[in-house]
Amino acid sequence: MAHPATYKALVESKSDRPHPLPPSKDMTQTLARAEAICRAHGVRLTRIRRTVLQALCSSPKPLGAYELADMLASNARRMAPITVYRALDFLIEQGLAHRLASRNAYISTVDSDSGRDAVAYLICESCGSVSEGSSAALTGALSDILLRAGFEPRSKVLEVAGHCAACQGHSQERH
Amino acid sequence: MAHPATYKALVESKSDRPHPLPPSKDMTQTLARAEAICRAHGVRLTRIRRTVLQALCSSPKPLGAYELADMLASNARRMAPITVYRALDFLIEQGLAHRLASRNAYISTVDSDSGRDAVAYLICESCGSVSEGSSAALTGALSDILLRAGFEPRSKVLEVAGHCAACQGHSQERH
DNA sequence: AGGGAATTCGATATGTCATTGCGTAACTCC
DNA sequence: GGAGTTACGCAATGACATATCGAATTCCCT
Ligand SMILES: [Zn+2]
Ligand SMILES: [Zn+2]
Ligand SMILES: [Zn+2]
Ligand SMILES: [Zn+2]
Image 1 (cartoon, each protein chain N blue to C red):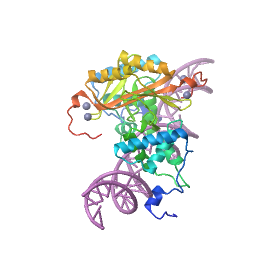
Image 2 (cartoon, chains in turn green, brown, blue, red):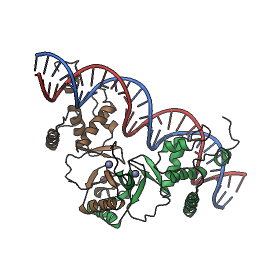
Image 3 (cartoon, each protein chain N blue to C red):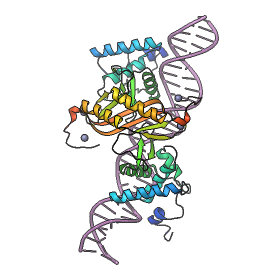
């Protein structure tokens, strides 16, 4: 291949860089917040990680890992799956992204505000949008169940698939 | 047995049939209930479907589709994945089995008693066991959230991974 | 019994999602 | 400037799921 001179050139070069989206105004805000979080955690938001996060943020729907790899391809050179997965793992660990287990897809959670509450993800099967729902009641009810069962939770998956408010009155169900 | 080369021989013959488990006492009860449900629904619990259900019932932990295919193999002839998936689809439609989305694995729900309540599946990462938890509070809290969001639910995924009561005080975390 | 429709299953191929192993490059810190 | 840690490239593989197409079987109605 026409190899970039150095590894650094590969990773940091400003030419040939994947740019899946135009720089939006909210996006810079969001990315700044992500940067701050990473600094606070003492970890690095590298170019690849930032690019993946940016793609997630700018997408109206959850994205699969291979979908991300395709989107972030530059010059017929697709990002290797493992690279995407590593970036996703990083983002999830830092609380910047979330994996929808029922979809094998990922969304940004930089702009989420839920604190320690259990969060239910509402996934619209019409428009693909995902919204979050939480309440003290939900959190309480769930921890009640766990307590009664003597179950020590590590991770929770709460996902509801259906139709969002905007997509009601759908005519044809094809689930 | 009489017609070794026929389809029927393949499907119904008593020799060469996969027998992943010894016939247990509770099992016959459970299978009888499954039979009754299928009759009531006007559908057929064929040998393949019954065999898959039986494997799920007799397993102390959730099983993957390929795991099932291996278990139900007879004479070095493994069940094709599509066959297992069709059986699983059937069982799930009839409410006899459940898919754990976070695990890509399946469990029997013949012996579940939860009525219309939302059910949370508690998956132990130490011993692999799965228990169900539900409460009116959980159901109410969830439908409250959905109502407020104007979201029309179709399917719900509630799965918690962690450690069951019996596996507390685990020494070695490997999550 | 006989014939046709609907269901169920077999066989092969392919598509989609995720990880492993190993080597190299870069950053950090002293 | 050397050691230790982290991040990335690359190829292969494993794990999970579906697409087609056709044949065998069962059901149901004459
Ligand atoms: Zn919608
Ligand atoms: Zn609907
Ligand atoms: Zn356990
Ligand atoms: Zn633990």
